[in-house]
Image (cartoon, rainbow, N blue to C red; front, side):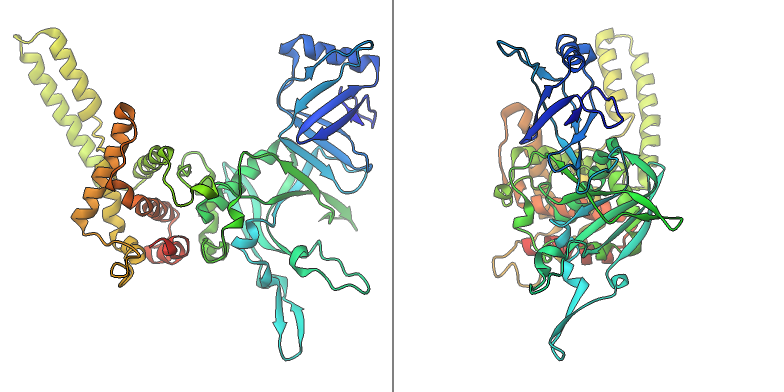
Length: 469
């Protein structure tokens, strides 16, 4: 049953059915049919970002997000006003009588989180006693106060045993019932419209840690309730289903030896998390692997994306000489423009062209992409080589070692791929040999902005990139 008109008071005016995120709605009242006709005939009245609430067949509460107008057809001999709408987001309780309009906590459960924070931390096997013991939760739980865009909340990662069931005569299924979680707890209730924002926060963190865009995990909401005068979390989750665009998931090909685990971030975690999610500081990560089948390939779109990422890191990079160069360039621009003004024998269109070139290219002193990449690389050459040039790996053919001049020559060739793309299409060359080196360089830049030392960054990134060299 569905409350299409938003009547409230547990009154419902239509039936609904959901199949593969396509919702079919059949009005039950004349008022609801008229409302559907209004939506069908007047496109301006269609609500976008509207939540529809109802009751599922198991008597649990359900809500889904309507982002597109209703598509309504005619039926004969009786027009039932049957409508359809695609929903990218479905929310459903596991118990009856739950108000789905708000939530107090959001939890990202299992999937890729199990790899970033292994669930086995919650238990230990005693060979002497021949038993499995559960470890104190404080041993594997970390909690931080974080702030993003002036919003404060608690972030924690731990291992959940909420799905563990002890049944008489049956052995507990520890493998499928124990999972790791990343959880956000809020001081005030949040509306359902905030789910996508917090989902994006978690996605950016997980994508950074795995080097993949195509990752998956469950999403659960929790509401607080009052018990003995205290506000405590309800143990029953509200399940969330989000439709993503991924063809496959990196969860199937990753393990704990190929990612940056959450415990590595330590006390600087809040700063990194803020950096990854605020618009003024967040890195451009679209160069990361999008499909499992493309893991060892370089797509032509990756060239543009990694160049954008390098440009962004340079713009956020604290280079002391940058301000001095700009001031000198502005002074030189003024001197040259004064010289141009004194040339009376030069046609005005030529003088204007020269002035425009000086103002656009010299005055702001913007280095070329090659110069930007080389400047970044100069700061991280030794930490990068400690990962990319492991002793004897060149002799074994595992990786190739470069002198500084050779590497900068490869940078030049890589930039040529980008520059020629808009004129003659992608022309591959030896510049692709350093694609993973450039990915690594971007990671070093991001971690430095989060105030990690080169030694700390090297320790973390050797897990994510070590097997590539």
